[in-house]
Amino acid sequence: MNLTPIPFDQLPFSKLFQDYTTSKNSVLEFFESDPFDSNSFHDRLNTLIDDETIDRKFIVDFLKDFNSDFTDSENVFAQIEKFSDPDTFAILTGQQVTLFGGPLYTIYKTITAVLYAKKLSKELNKNVIPVFWLADEDHDFEEVTGISVPDGDSNCTLQYNGESDDKRAASVKFDSSVEELKEQLFEVLHDTDFTEKVKKFIDKNYKKGESFGRAFGKLLLDLFSDEGLILAGSNNLKAKEYTKHLFVKSIRDHKEIQTKLDDTTYNLIEKGYHGQVHVQSSNLFYVEPDGRREKLEFAENKWTTATRKFEESELIEIIDHDPELISPNVFLRPILQDSILPVISYAGGPGEVAYYAQMKDFYRHFEMQMPVILPRFSITLVESSISRIIEKLPFSITEYNQRIEDLEKQFVIKSETKDLEKLFREWKNYVDELTLKMKKEIEEVDPSLKASAGKASAIYSSELDKLKGKLYRSVKEDEKIQLNRISKIKHNLFPDQSLQERQTAFVYFMNKYGLNIWDDLLSLLENEKPDTHKAIDI
Image 1 (cartoon, rainbow, N blue to C red):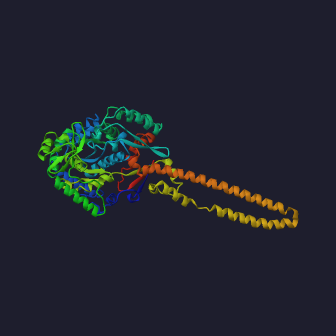
Image 2 (cartoon, helix red, strand yellow):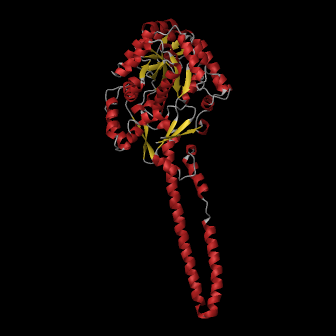
Image 3 (cartoon, rainbow, N blue to C red):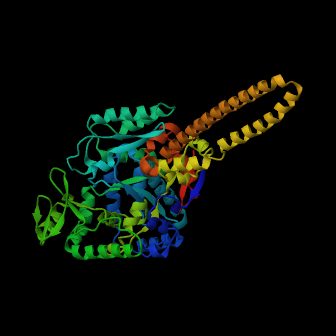
C-alpha cells in the first residue's frame, strides 16, 4: 500500500471542515480545542481527572449490559473492566446502524478511534479505550437501508425494502427478503478467493429476525474487538435512567437552549460557515408504545407530538418514571455520551465536525465541556486496475470529482495534439510538387509515359486518403478506449458524484482483498494524522 496526502481544499469538503483541519482561528473559536495540538488532549485529560461526577461502577455495569447483547468476547469484557480504573478514558466515534456495515467511512471512523486510542494511551500514559457509539435511536430508516457496490464500469445500488413502521431503525428486524438481498449482493461482487469467508461473515450477522442495530454491532465487533473496540448506545434502560436529569433540563431550559444554539449558528453563518443541523424548539423525541419515535415540539405553552399533548409537569413525570419513552436528537446525543463516559475525544466525519461547531455553548449550558473533536481519517482506495489507467490519462485523482461530461470534453481538447488534416495536406502537397518535377523528367525520357506517371501519383494520393481514414479510425478508437477509462475511474473514485468513502460498501473491498485488508490499513495509518485526505494504492 502506498499513501498520497491530498489537501481537503482540492476535494468536495465544506469550508468549515477545510478550515478546521488547517486549524484556522476563525473556526477553532467554536470549539474547545485544536485536534492537531497535542496539548489539547492533555488539557482534556486534566479536565476529566478533576471531574467528580464520573461514576465508574455505573460505566462498567452499563457497558457490560449493553455489550452482552452483541458478544460474549472475553476481550470486549476485559476492555470494559478497565473502566473501573480511574486511569481509563474513552475515545468515541459512532454513526447510524447501516445495511451490511454501510459505506467505507464506517471503517475509517473505527480505524481512527482504534489508532488514536493506542496513540493517546502512550502519550498520556493512561488507558484509552475505543468506543463505537451506535446511533440506535435514529428513525430515518431510508438512510440506512441501501448500499452501493461497484459493478464493472458503473455502480449498483442494493436496497432493503422491508417496513419500519416509523420505529427506530436499530430496532427494525429483517424479514425474509434479506436473504434474497444477500444473493443479489454476491452476484454483483463476483467470486474471489475470499468470497466464502465474506459470505459467512455477512450471513452470521444479517439474517431474518435479526435487528439492524444488533447485526451492525455484531459485525463491528467481529472486525475490531481484537483491536480493543467496545460498543455503547443510548437505547438502553440503564443509560436512560442515568441521564434522565438531562432530559428534564432540556425540557425546563428549552428556550434558553434554543437561544444559545440559534446564536452560535448565526455566528457561524456570519463567519462564512454554515449550520449543519436546523435548530428547533426541542431536542427530544417521544417514543410511542408501538415503537414509533415522534418529535416533541413546544408550542402555545404545551409539549406536543403529532398525536399527543403534555403539560411540562406531566412530561417531567414521564421522564422520571419511564425515561425509555424519551429519546435524544443529534444535539443531545453527545451530551448523553459524555455524561456517561469519560470522553477525551470524539472522532467524526465532516458533517459531525460541523454540528459540533454549533454546540460549544450548548455543552456549557449543561455544565460540561466539549471533548477534542478529531476528524476521522478520510480515504480513497485506488485499486491497481485503476491506478494503471490513471497513468494513461491527463488528469489528477482530484480532477475526477468533476462531472463525467466535463472530463470527456477536457480530454478531447487535451488529446487533440495532432492536426491530421494539416499533416496529410502537407504530405499531399509535397507529393504533388515531387510528381510535377518527376513527370517532367519522365517526359524527357519517354513522352508516352507522362500519363502513367500521373496515374501513379493519383494512386499514391488515393492510398494516402485510405491511410488518413485508418488513422482517424485509430484515433477515434483510442479516444473511445480512453473515454471508457475515464468513466471507469470516475465511477470507482467518485461514485454518484460523491466521494468513494461516502458511497461504496466496504464489503466490496473485503470480498476482493480479504477480511484482513483493514489490518493493513491500520498499519499504514499508524503514524499518520487525519489532517489531509489520503489516496491509498492497494
